[in-house]
Image 1 (spheres, rainbow, N blue to C red):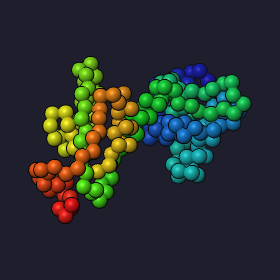
Image 2 (cartoon, rainbow, N blue to C red):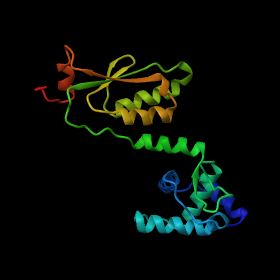
Image 3 (tube, helix red, strand yellow):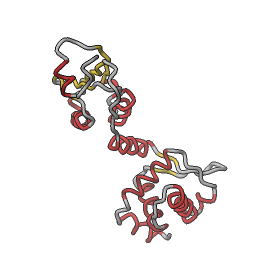
Length: 199
């Protein structure tokens, strides 16, 4: 692909699903032979075969090249040049983007209740109000109950999910997850979450 074709690829919007697949492949440390560093066509062929035979995703080689150039132009991926074995790597921006994508897909699977509540408290500064709004919206999407102004509640384990969200939004020091046993008046909450009344 020449310089004009590369610029043309950047102007066209690449397939979003394909770009996400490539980011995830890079996040897994996809190893490519050193020839790929010199040949975009080789790299596109490698990804084409991987997506087609491993994931059963029928993207064209042109679409893959377009997405690669787009992701590199956005500085989400890079190709280390001084290694005997080359690979696609995620840049700092790429890691942040991938965490955001992972956060969007995140869910918390309900499990049998262990009789404990998860209280999530946070104090996010005004300068990070954008992250605060996203965080609140995500908690509600995940099924948390808005217990008080900056306190949300859930009966299910959620430490890993909260860690992922706070890392993605860069608000880890502002958020605290507390596990507590049953307390007077929690029967209303048990009813809301359809929990076992025998506990």
